[in-house]
Image (cartoon, rainbow over all chains, first blue to last red):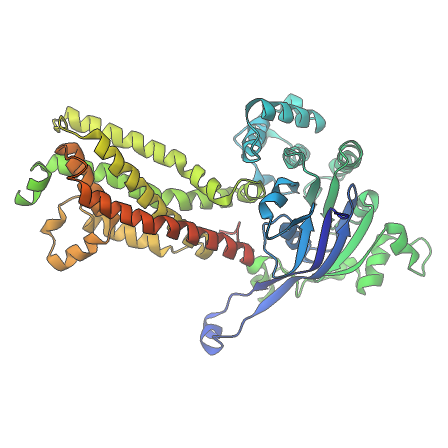
Length: 293
Length: 219
């Protein structure tokens, strides 16, 4: 196994719900939207790979597919040598998923109780779990607050707790879905330092990180893939991507413009998938995707 | 009164067993789908499903407390019944436990099928609707099914709750032996043989369908 993560033509199409009239007028027509299209990625062990794109570009769908939460429509993928679909249980055993959604914890439980619960789902019990949880709480700097209720934590502490949870099973691969999304600039900077120093430096994990934050991608990632409208436009090191541009001292924003033909902030997700309801809202002229740059 | 003769002739005892044990069906119909819905609404389901623990194990174990609590409630009902004069001195506890295990297997499977519908449709689960609306009326909870017109009794005979309550009353109130309870045990076993694989298959399909649709955590 040369690559820790390897995808081949990985594609996800979602069926759109039919309206009442369509149901009768076109009963056999299948309306689909392509959220992720023919993605080919090869990531080596210990690499911090970033996937950069605006909201609705397909980053979260791609990560959820790689975490076995969404089944691909076409293509294949292997994580740690395990087939994403056939060996989904083994894939889950070898990965950690860190989401920016702070609702993914039980707010009335303490930080330690939350970790104990998720440790039991990873088949860690009693002493093994206690030892591992103590290690992780020290690693993320939350040992002193471990017995406080989760609801009393700041956004940064909640995100650190999400990292501790993602590391519970000592996974070879960590998937991070916009880990600094809910943080203020100071807390985000701290977290980036933590990821670089501890997750990569001390723990040596392979990290697959999605972000729509240019400085974050520039600061953290060994290699970057730019995704737009579900397609990977380019993959390379930041230096490599910049070298391809005929511009002095280009930024990642210029790289995005060069490879997608669009300003990062101008991207409106006409085709982009943001859940069925999101798509329907988009078609009805509602919110057209959040743009954070 | 003649309709109550097969159950010992006492209406209070009859209805006590009916209300107590029909609670298991209501628990099964609610707990599995509510455990999924609850985790979806709290936002914790995704974090649970990315662990190696199987989805079906998560749903089953999340509902375990509801069944334990229901068992405690049934015990309380029976104790109060005894204090109020219900005669269970001849009860065949072993036979009652066998009926109870088969009942929980049948009702649990129905609950898992119901949860499968919730996972795919999100709302409007037809299984829950069917069993909720028919079981109390046709399952012999509040009155013996023999008081119903014969053509309506056909509905009673396709409901597992009918055999479950009948067996439980015979075992607890009249102390029927296992051989005397054979019709109920055989009927519940047949229901189990059909419903358990059906429940597992439907849930596996529902999870696969939700993962295809990307709607696993939507509610």
